[in-house]
Amino acid sequence: MKLILTPGQAADVTQAKSLIDGVPFEVVIGDKGYDAQEVVVAIEDRGGEAVIPSRKNAVAPRTIDWTRYKDRNLVERFWSKVKHYRRVATRYEKKAQNFLAFVHVASIIILMR
Image (cartoon, rainbow, N blue to C red; front, side, top):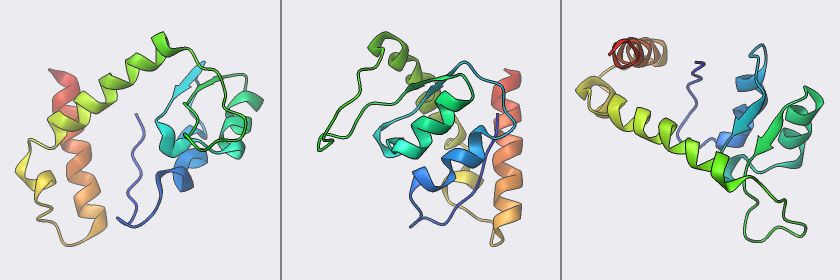
């Protein structure tokens, strides 16, 4: 698992390449926020399959494996569990590195269950 903390106003797609760098994968599943041609090309260049639905205003929408896309709910459920920790949900930490450290701790606790 790889976590990157960004400002609230930053788009998810800006960190997509950083998230896949150095991580072995066969399939990358993402929501429409990661629909960018350069992200899809980066995934396919490494031999992976991009399961990212096209935005509704896409000129040439891609076809994806919707059965595989349903696995994205694992990530959504994981974040739901992380947000049960008050320090994450309310962001008590003032410094970003301290907040990210606690998100890592909460993630470890959840993954150990």
